Image 1 (cartoon, helix red, strand yellow):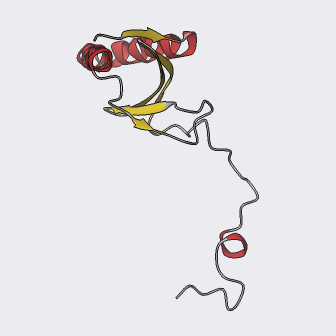
Image 2: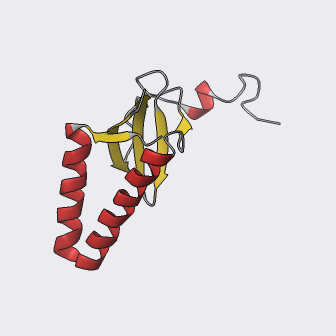
Length: 117
């Protein structure tokens, strides 16, 4: 069974921006980028559970697939694969809140002696 692959507006906009950025710097890199995502969508249409389930994604049952240097989040509903977000792997994961007040020693290390054994 072949699944239909759809892109959210945000995912489509990211692909367009990234392709434009790469095209301005290296047409070959832009072509490789576009081809990599075409292959990923073909693979997802044939093997929709190719990615891994990620419990911390906003929607229960969402999946994540690494495509080169990029991370693709998607949902599988019936015969449709809906790509909800794409980002470069160096970008902060949108589902992880950044804690500016995080204190490694106070929050992680044991209180007694502050030394891990």
